[in-house]
Amino acid sequence: MQLTTARLLLREFVESDWEAVRHYQSDPLYTRYHPFDHPTEQDAREFVGRFLEQQQEQPRRKFQFAISDPTDGRLIGNCGLRITDHFTEAGMCEADIGYELDSRCWGRGYATEAAREMLRFGFEEPGLHRISAGCVADNVGSVRVLEKIGMRLEGRLRENKFFKGRSWDSLLYAILNREWQAHRLSPSNDVGGAV
Image 1 (cartoon, rainbow, N blue to C red):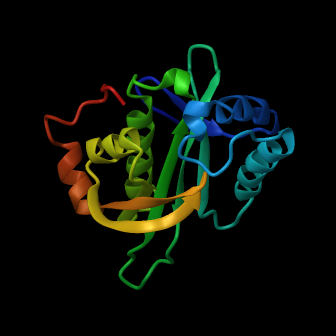
Image 2 (spheres, helix red, strand yellow):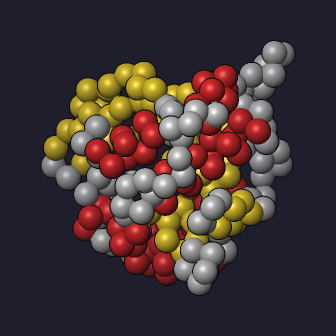
Image 3 (tube, rainbow, N blue to C red):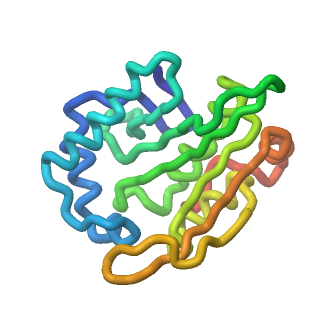
């Protein structure tokens, strides 16, 4: 499976992607909001290995895509959608999204573009009812991405994460299918941007 946006190719992971993943996950700018500092080769291989296993699930409930530059195929991050709730009789279902990007590619709108595509994919393909996302409250860049794609702040979890010798607050964002439909038709909803 592969998805395309105006500037990005979102493709299935392959085993050899571990090297690029380890490279960008080793950057101190990236690790600032993560519990680890220097992923080993084994860490990166296991990280990619989980995504390879998810590709074999039937029915598939987790979709993690390598974000690559379509001009040169270079892996610059990843994004995903994980269905967290089963379909009900009404057909409603919930998922969460996530994304990460090589810090050398920050500030170009790629994270926003990839996250927006995860919403489109989730609401149009499996026909989800609600999609949520969480982030560390201090991660202002991620907060901007979630707000730009139309997600609403639903709550702040105080000091619910502990890493790097301190406690961190988390934010929970979500959007309903009908809200996404209205947001995507808004004239202010552009593809470009600073995040």
